[in-house]
Length: 159
Image (tube, rainbow, N blue to C red; front, side, top):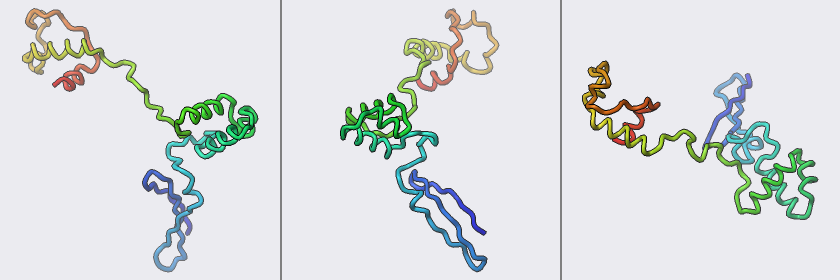
């Protein structure tokens, strides 16, 4: 019985084959031809240009070929080829960048965090679950605070 398995070792894809002849233990082999060539773990499966192809694109354009012609031959848009060429000219690697946002769009302002923390310190008895149903007017005369998503996270952050 022949079977194939996929194993991940050191962020590299290793293709492992199992060979059995029905007599004794199975023998494992690694398909090195498929395992070489960088880490496809973060590579989009439909990407036109893998890192190795991007390097070739940059070399061809630097040798004098037209960007649009090289892009057409590599089945990529002129804009994509220009993007990788600009990154290479800037000294950046031609590998994929992270898609993680550089900043959180809905980050709670620091003033609001401070207000929440201050009120939490001023009203320790009212944070407790047993006082949950008390009216807000009994909260030491403080005006009611607007509802903020993640108040518990803010309190944990400031404690």
